[in-house]
Length: 300
Image (cartoon, rainbow, N blue to C red; front, side):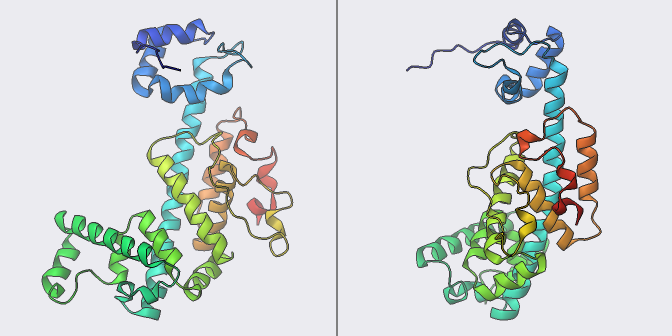
């Protein structure tokens, strides 16, 4: 079927929403649409629609929709803070353990990344070259100094420098490629199996990208479910459990990792305060039970 909806002015968009039952001052609604866009706002409007209709439920106000937007915006900020700490920890641990096992430049050797196929290793190496080139063009002081001094012998810096140039995807490839000994040492520090930690990094990368594009998190469903530790060895993750394909489980794993990485952090306190400021928000849409703050994973 051919798409034939015309482009509407902001005023026409506002009139359409008000005509469907949204209680709003038209001028204020136009201002919101100019700042946010109809398409982005529609993701937050959808839960307020009457079942089987394009009309809104009786009593739906712009204020209630906008508070949901604000809740989500601040949740993204909290998650970015958590993911930053987890990412920096992971980069630090990867570089440290790899360098001590394989040396500063062991990443050139495919034998030091035995879990990568030859084609994947070469693709990763090319990506590293691109990232080093971009850094040199930006004239980062340390890297310019390194190549001025050691460039006759080395085409890239040592792993503890290179790890900071990698984007999250390159770091994930690095993690996948290293041998079991390094993965296990890192995973032991956060109290989960290495295979589970790898899955969590992949999920966090997805969430990180979503946050970077200011996309909705509240009732979003992950495309790839999060791998959880086994029930036999880690019963606290399963009694009761959280759905492993909603944003609630991401909050749980962030809390677990942060408690291991930085026990003095106040992230959980900030998260609880955030939810307290928006008591009307349905946590079930996030995959959290009503009493989620009393779950052992949040109280341990």
